[in-house]
Length: 141
View (cartoon, rainbow, N blue to C red):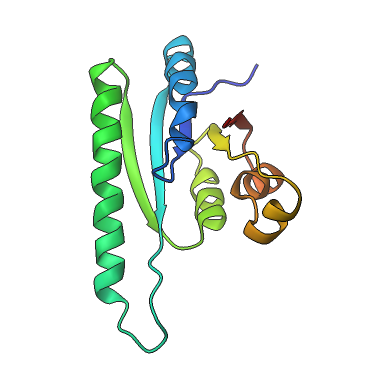
């Protein structure tokens, strides 16, 4: 049987994304695994504008958000570290998951279907289809 020692948990800052956390807490305790939190940041700017300030701002906000989540999990006795990456969410999640210390990806799917999924895309679906590691999905209701 495969040993899961490190669980990657991508979060986008939404309440929906955090629905996976109680299940990950239990999984981490049962498997004696650590948790790697990941937030992918991207700044949207107008063409021709200098994106530097916006990029710095979204990265800092992502770091603060993850710091708060990490602190809560550590208070529960879990081993947690946090990572912020900048770029396309699915690509950055997949790249981070490909690292050899990640054993499983646990994330929430927003449950969009039909036209909404076609127009907005599905990060969870892209990760599920292309991840080199197992993926544990929890549906947000």
